[in-house]
Length: 207
Image (cartoon, rainbow, N blue to C red):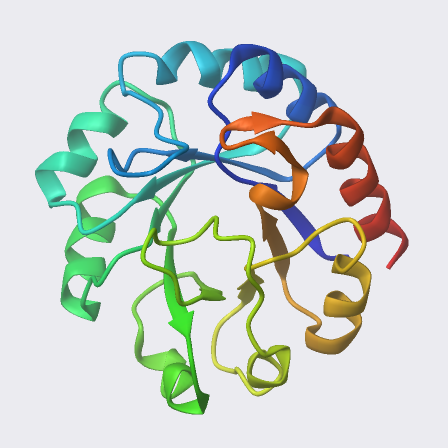
């Protein structure tokens, strides 16, 4: 069964609602330039609410962060997974993995078949395939899923422009380990729409 990640949760009520919806992963974005940025001082409260309302694992999203930057957040927030969504090298991924003792997901911006070459060379637990966008995800724009079909070597998390209306077809085509959505279930950046969240979860579960 395809897992579900709702990313960019910033509000306490949304954390409770998304966790209660039965998703598998909740993404907390710690990149200050993101429209869905969650300040580390607020994150423990959001994380605690999410954990009290469901069994979702918490994914911390970082962009070109140093080992020290990631450790500064994980010392305050009980994260289950670290998602690296910048231009990190395989070496940087390995250094962060050895420092935080948590699974690592690496996001790859997909623009052509060359984007998915040698995915097995990444020292990570999963590869997140996303649209190429200046703001490192959350663009609401899909990429060519025909490319994602060719990906191999690691579990694939499919992102980029997914919505309750499109996710079932994407799952049928790509057969990913998980799907990741942010803007497709929002009323505004960082503000989730509960009806859209429920519709997205239902579409994935029935796919």
